Image (cartoon, rainbow, N blue to C red; front, top):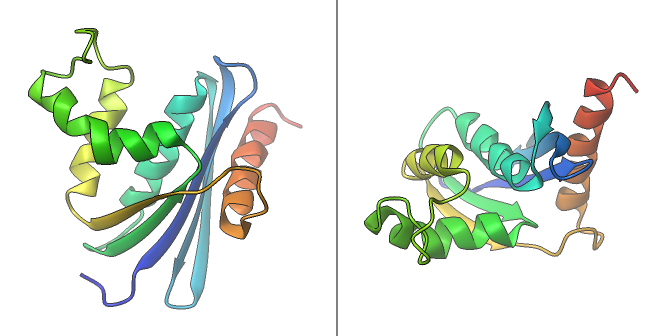
Length: 148
């Protein structure tokens, strides 16, 4: 594991829910920054929030210590509180319904196991620099998808 944590800021956006969506990532490590973004024509906000985190962790070339910031309580609580119960129940909720976005949760679980991740929730649209940049990247991805 790297000595200095990699800082990651992620965000997802959707215009309509469902609708066209985008995801954005800002990675900071050893004084360098990298931005990633992408979009999907028909998706949901929660899928874009999860995709941002997945793409961020996929971008890491080696097992790392990570401080990951998300403004999505769905992502933060899902990965740090709910996922263990979902797995024990065969990917079912407490109400015995299938877990939404199971494909993405499974991938995130697999990626998170490779790293030591500290999951931090930040309030969205509250002037937090890293979160604002990730949000701008997610929205840029939607604009690029729509040819704006």
